[in-house]
Length: 321
Image 1 (tube, helix red, strand yellow):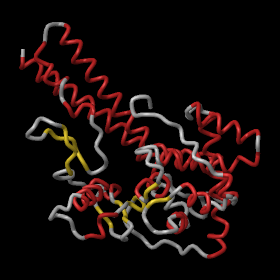
Image 2 (cartoon, rainbow, N blue to C red; image 1 turned 120 degrees about the horizontal axis):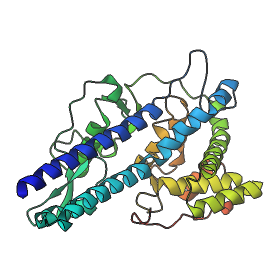
Image 3 (cartoon, rainbow, N blue to C red; image 1 turned 180 degrees about the vertical axis):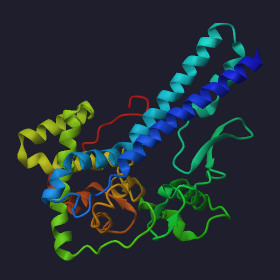
């Protein structure tokens, strides 16, 4: 009986790993949109940007919603595994209760951590012991220290080690190490004053276009769909509602009413290769340099009036997402 259960668990694990790899490949394909020679791309008004608007909208939207999409994927896989094991339990394989009661099944660890069972039988999120060895140069990432790392796993693991005060931490500066963009580090064009001055307007328009596109595809919650419809009917709310929605969306992981530098990753990393002004723009949003962006700071960064901004984040839990 136990032998049959072990074989079943192995088969399920293989299926989950294969599905997860397909999921990651889908993300990688969308994240690595390239720019044709002789054209420019990003948030601007140039003809080349218009031609690529649909592809880049999907590119940015993916980065913005990747965390929520990944969480839902993991939860669906757990539910599928439990369903398979429960079916066999109904057939008399009561031995599998040890798998169903695994405390890690309901635990979601942050990037760089993995769920493990401690000596008391409790689920704890510990730093990853070792990342997979990467030979593909496309897995490389560039950090905010302008250092090339072999994979995002290595970056997240290092940050975890430093936050846990491990002796393996390379230095205090790695407490806030983050991925700037995908690929090896390279020299980025300087964002001049004119580009930076116009960037808030372009960013506002871009956020609204993404919000509207997601509404048309029915990928917004009812709460945010109502805000989008309000923005469509009232032009004075167009930029404000889009700004509030995106700030709330970035904060959806922990709902602490702050957007950390790390939480900006979904819009920073995918756009760096397309918009060289995105990094300095987002850095300016953190006006007091405390690694947390309030709604007021976000609105000021986008050149919106503070009195127009209000906390309208959708309240939801991981179970209802």
